[in-house]
Amino acid sequence: MKLTKYILTLLAAVAFLTGCYQGIDSISFVDPGPDQTAPDIKITSPAEGLAIEVDSLVASVWIQYSATDDIELKSVTVSMDGTEIQKMTTFKDYRRALGEFRFRNVTTGNHVLTIKAEDLQGKSTTKTVNFTKKPPYVPIYPGEVFYMPFNGDFIEKITFKEATKAGTPGFTDASLKGLKAYAGATDSWLTFPMTGLKSNEFSASFWYKVNASPDRSGILNASPAGEDRSKGFRLFREGSTTSQRIKLNVGYGTGETWNDGALITAPGTSWVHIAISISATTAVIYINGAPVEVPNKGLDWTGCDVLGIASGAPNFAYWNHKFDKSHYDELRLFNRAISYEDVQTIMQNDKPYVPKTGEIFYMPFEGSYKDIIGNQQATVVGTPAFAAGKKGKAYSGATGSYLTFPAADLTKTTQFSAAFWMKVNATPDRAGILVIGPPDAAAPAAPNNRTSGFRFFRENAGGKQRFKLNAGNGTADTWFDGGTAADVDPTTGNWVHFAFTIGSAESVVYINGEVVKQGAFANLSWKDCDILSIMSGVPRFSGWNHLSDLSLMDELHIFNKALTQAEVKAIMDAEK
Image 1 (cartoon, one colour):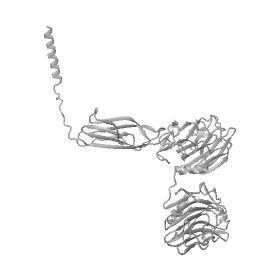
Image 2: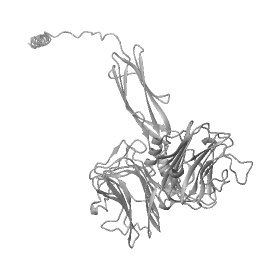
Image 3: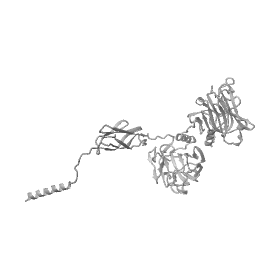
Image 4: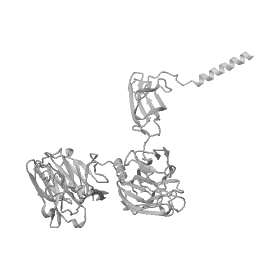
């Protein structure tokens, strides 16, 4: 009986299974078709051009990629700088490989990640990514204790500590230097501990592109809690939609120092350099290198534990000095009072001067007598000094004083131009200004050989000063004396712009962008001309008493071509 029951049950199961598979085709092989294409590779990480910045000699990089083939992959090989670091020959999905792992031996320098995928038919694809491991940041200025370049993060590069974010500060690609810059946002700023940043003297340097909305904000501050300005410092701005005044307040313990600074144009269409320098005796604001200095009595850090960046927060948000939606770049802090010369150096390093077309020499007189295009110092004779200039500082002449400069690199041309500003001192009543001339064998003590080179100088003309140009063609000289058109009244105390050009067919003298003398001239000769004299005729053009000039000179440019009037005016207008 039991046997009969088992047989019937088995027959029923067979019948059921047969019914389930009725109408369903059996599994059969499908031809995938011909292998037509090589594998495709996508590299997700690292990104092309990645710059790894960590405070160590060796770093790691996350590698993430995919490789696909239309039929079947045979192998995927990953190499770093030509050395194999991973190889896959078996795959869960024979048409697709996913790889991700951390490579932990990235040394300082440039690197190339290479991924090669091959299919069963031998077709292959190779892709590469170039990236860099930067060396740990080493301070480049004396006393530098903090550096935040804002290149996509808020990390201070000396300690590698990250600032604390409030709100949603971000970045802009329109940086002054590097990949990115800080971009402020509503109700957003950064804070950073003041540990290790407090010193008897303190300075800061950064680049700034102002957003005048809101019409006031904090910029940098380390301030105690409450409305207490007798300690720490507060750098901030106030103004309108067209201009903003940068101000500094310093607490010295028993009181406060105010520096009302200067105006910058708003909205900021170009980067402005701002620096502050606080010592026991002065509190200085530098705007594009120009100082505004007031007396000070020191710096008290009591209760100042947090640095606020791009806001008055956390402790100077009163008077509505709150968040700043401006852009910031290259923020540095120092444990000393930086000087005028320090500021000029930082500015030039961060934003090197770009010569104009044909410009071969530029001396701005910003605390040094250096040609910043050739990076060469002039030789100083006597005791010239510096004074307030047309821009920043200027050369200030003194009796028996002038500069000389090698002329070899300035005379490799048949055309020549110079442009500069002067504030004329009519005493003495004549002087040399710019001279490249030859020696005078006939009168070595009072040379006046004008057969080659040029001489630009001034002479008294009825109480005014007349400016003249003389140039030599190798055998004779030509005069460009503009008469009364070339006269300048020295009693006004105004800055006057001068330029002269020596071309292949003519020479021109300009005053304040206007032609005061123009005449034919060809074949400028540089025979035996080896010295440029600045602010004197000495040593090659003193025969008519064209000695040192006690005037001020600023923004001296020299070109290896003849400037047009439009170019002269453009140079002048850019420096007004």
